[in-house]
Image 1 (cartoon, rainbow, N blue to C red):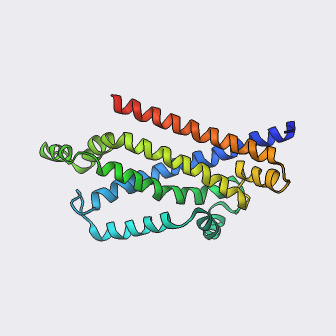
Image 2 (image 1 turned 90 degrees about the vertical axis):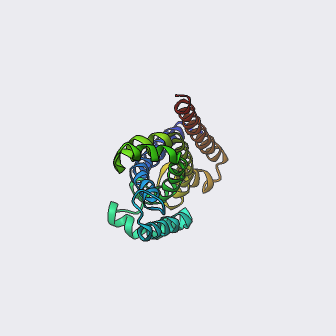
Image 3 (image 1 turned 45 degrees about the horizontal axis):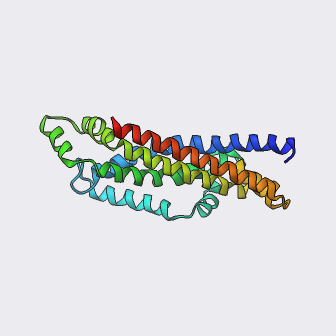
Length: 217
């Protein structure tokens, strides 16, 4: 690869990190409240709103069932409304966030449901309010599982960000298609693939390490 290609690789890497990083933050900020509400509003939960729970669960399942590339195209009008464009990094953040949020919410919900119900009953027995139970019992006890689920979410988002390059979203996927596939340059494609694999391995290692530290406390 030429020095120019390495420079483009650096910019593409930063674009991918920006897409995944910002989308991951949005997924956490939106996904955890969704997961908490799904657990609290479920039958036997602390709020018990079965109708709202069913509607919200159906919406989340609908977005989860949609393939990312289909969701990416279907959200183009909404993406243009939010960002003013349908290409580039910021245009990719919108569908990435919308795709990752329900995915992460369901994983976080599973972790929250695995919290020992006896701890919740003990907190209720000493007069803790719902918010205190969520903040001091549910979330701390489920944190290792939530971190593990967040790791899986980021890994899937890295793959989705590469797929978004097919529609001009920028990043490593765009570079692989534009300078590798379309120009029949297998070296560029191999280097981009190696960078993506390294990113996934690094994220997975960091997530697993964090989970082990949390469970060892």
